[in-house]
Image 1 (tube, protein in one colour):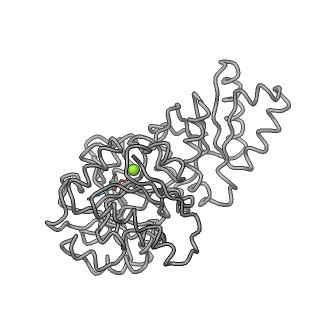
Image 2 (cartoon, rainbow, N blue to C red):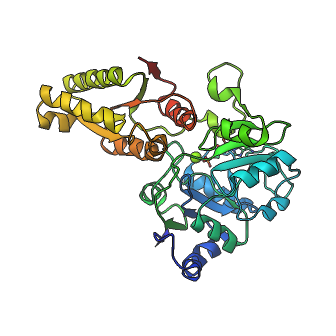
Image 3 (cartoon, rainbow, N blue to C red):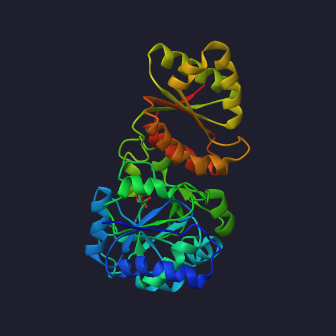
Length: 367
Ligand code: AMP
Ligand code: MG
């Protein structure tokens, strides 16, 4: 049975928060599973030092056992029991970005079960920037292994209702908090070598990291994922992640060309009696709607077209925040196909496009 608690007020008194978190924290210390909000996406947590606890995460999510988990901590001091060595530049990065949406990969200490790391000799660690997550970890008294709280293969959950849809009945506790503010999983950064290497792009970008420590590389497998023999060093990246059930196509180009591509996709959806999901910027969708209204009856538009907004073209962070929930909404709306406007890979666009390419199984068209 899954117990639920709602904690929506992020400014509540700390003693009231502690009172609410007491039960889920005890569940974590007793090797149970708790889904909780973070600033990136919702996480499904368990005691990272217990094989038995960690096994429950893999089981609930249906996650392949070679896909390692991120261990969440609430204090830097917890690193000592988890990792072998910390480079001075990694300390600088931690003080610049923690708590926050970046995970560091260190050489692991013997205390960390190999189940947590998918058999690797490294461990991924993050301190989330979220009052509920931090306090929950602290009260549990253990480091908390927590991958995204979705069924394996589904888009990561950015709202409590996504977690309930995927994991109700499969975990011990779900904390229903506010929507995730970042909306994409953390940047994963390998800090075991002399220069940091991005293994998974996220909100903290290569430029931001290089801005602190002078240089930062990007794992070539991220950009050239289909080059033979180039296995991603971040194991999770090889799985077909973030995939909605519909066929997905990503289009990149000028607004006028994108709107034309959307219009053509609507024409063929109506012709083939299919339902099309369209994900574009608010500005694109306003123009598209006007065009469609001159060509089709409102009832046909409603039947065949499902519009989802990325937010304004001026706000890439909003695009990141809306992305996974829009993919889920298109599935719920039973879209057979989804056409999505992509962006350039600058700044957070790098992370957005990384997730979109996965959702589209690499199908990106420049128009
Ligand atoms: P999730 O929390 O579901 O986003 O998954 C965690 C992801 O972090 C994994 O899929 C990996 O891509 C990455 N990760 C975790 N541990 C390691 C590690 N030791 N080395 C490299 N990447 C890791
Ligand atoms: Mg995940």
